[in-house]
Image (cartoon, rainbow, N blue to C red; front, side, top):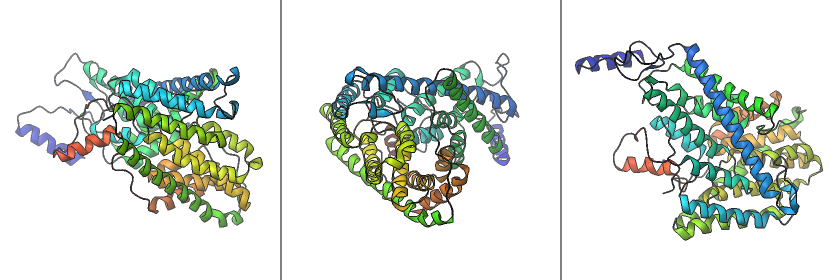
Length: 490
């Protein structure tokens, strides 16, 4: 890095340009020679405090958004019989028949809203890739994006909140950074720690964001012309993650609301349980195959139907009908899976193993159906629940320790589909006891090398991937730092 910097200085000198990085390797003034510019933090401690403040802000936003989605779930699912629904219990508070009309109505509302606004959340992977590739993330219609984020959650979609919420937070943090630029500062750390803080706030796992950034960081773009050494980056990611987690936990303790992933009971696994490691990992791999095949099939169907005015309405309505009909028989396929995981931890011993296995397999397919056909959201929460449900179903059949089986199955499923073993371990670190993290890590490493059919070339409707392919077709090396609304459907 030092040689590269000296090369840049020599090149700038040869062109007669002034050096814009006067020995301040973390944050620099936006305008050369701006004597009246506001003082910028120049030390890791100052940047850590800035990252901590950013993390707290992210935590507050995440808590507010997740709590609002819970209140909307209470409103929609409380319509049946005039009683409120508990988001922690999901559809179990509603009559058996209610999911079908509720999900069809939800598909109609989502379709009408999408047809009017042409806005939908992007996946967590797309948001992270865009931030790394361009150094920024922008939403031209933030208010419409908030509604698009909330609707699938409120009507029981089998999707998680991490996709839309991360995009909203990333856009807001980039706006803050750009505002500070106009005030005379370049504080790239504000946007740089966004994903780390968001993951920690949403999942309640402080190391998830840090490991996600470490695993996926192939060199952040230098759009702000500042240098960040890896130890400093790790410090910033960790402080932002802890700040976000502290913000969520503080408000949850004071007011209630978002609580993150549930924690499984302490494992009592012994050497005899190790014999069931490969069967549980095989179950997780089977879930990954079901998920990937479903993703390809539903994305192909979505592409065949097209994105005309009628299709934008028909696709989410059809998805709602299939989801609702399945939920009449298997209620836990609804929602993100956070509340259903809590119920699973409590009731697994008295639940039929066939029901747990069927629910996990169905949810792995329905999540991809929802995402491809207009109920846009994330897949991490549903995948963790599906893996845990199938793992505990196997535990009832085989007599293996239920926590051990759930950890191995869920880890294999998530790592196989994401090909991010470190992120998988970071997400599940607070779900499972410390004694099972070793088996979780082993399952994630195994899943990393297992082959899967290729994912669809563009995740249907994914503007980020389409823009990347378009730039490649035109022979452009990099996308511009600020692009059109990342959430607009093509």
